[in-house]
Image 1 (cartoon, helix red, strand yellow):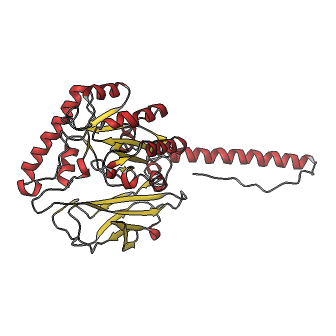
Image 2 (image 1 turned 90 degrees about the vertical axis):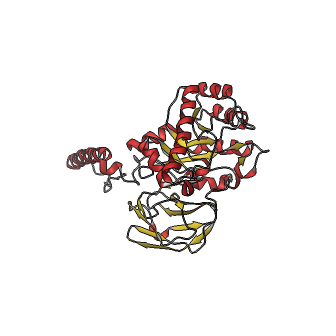
Length: 386
């Protein structure tokens, strides 16, 4: 909240005592007025209603970046070259505040503030090139970061970190968290096995991975990054019941309205490694969606039976200029009050897809609210492609 006190100019050539006294009186009244406004401003900052306003500066907001490989010789779709990665980090160093993933999670959970333009850095899969090519850059800049690993792949899978390297990195301040034991498709077999048996099977995998990480590193964060970003409502509810925080691979900033069992992350490798487009994502704001009619990202059909509605709780979101995209193409939207609706006539592909919606901020020039709605479609055998 900003305020300015405007005064009428005075004639400095007037020398009478009465004018001097008038000036002193005006200054005194202005000082009292300013202090009063300052007190009101302070009370507003402390009030819950101000803290929960997504346009308020005290509201936590952050972008979480997702990387896999930092290498020029690994699959292009999940890789960023060491040179491009360095340029990303140098840009963050100049324009953003890099914070730990734990700081982001705790700020959202407790609705406490984060530094302006906060960004957290994450990696999935525990590849050795993270240590070889990314760690020296991150350590030199003093940036915290988190690596989601598959314990049964460490020291075994091709081009994976070893446990000795993981322990050394952990001792150097790197945080490691759960990505399941063996990078399975967590939704495979859900519709064939039945929800109860399927959920029991995948949850044993999650708990076993968490236990192995705890045994090796003496940490128990209960953070789970879904392999391939795939999850269902049943799986997210299980995470919530067990006290886990979940991370997806759909895009968007995170804030107080974000789903703690499906926090979005911006992919920053492959086709998304371009720093020009990444800058907009780094500056994005978490869309304050309080309700979505899209009940389950795990789809049982390849067509949406009805439009998806999003209820948005903020006057700062300029819904008159909202845009939604599917597979890179704009789709039709309808706005009524604070409800945004979109529909898809296209057939959803087998695997992973999403609709991204953005809208400009009314108060923060050049910044956009961002929200992603993911869809996961199995093949005819109930499995998901890599």
